[in-house]
Amino acid sequence: MTQQDDFGSPIEAQLAAPPSAVAPMATSTLSDTPGHFGNAPTGYGGAEKLIQSKLAVLACLFLVTGFLGLPLLWMNRRFSAAERLLWAIIVTIYTLVLIGLVGAIVIWCYQQLVG
Image (cartoon, rainbow, N blue to C red; front, side, top):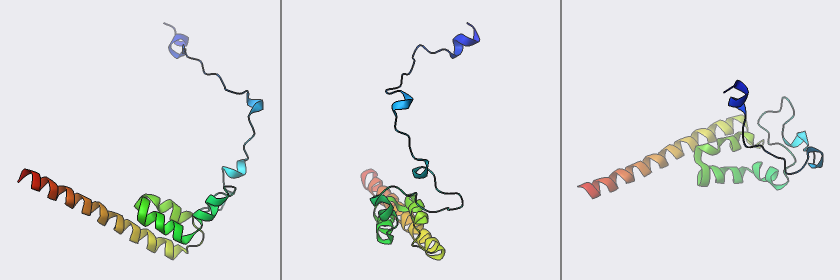
């Protein structure tokens, strides 16, 4: 076997449409302007309004994502830096308490089954 055979593939990909037929994607929707960190990219319509809503972000953090949703908090321009830090700490503690509660329930259930 030669080196060329090692890298050869019997499967070849084909484009569904030629590159000229594909609509060009605006780079402004993919990247933020340099130096603007923590802001949601523009061009997403209603998603931009939702990301910038304090109530929607806090509801998402406490009801859905827990501390995994902290990037939403840091992208929201309506929170000050102190508020972001305070809410990040509160959401992290809240999430850890919920995880501990679930762990305690699992241990209790296990002891009820075994004992």
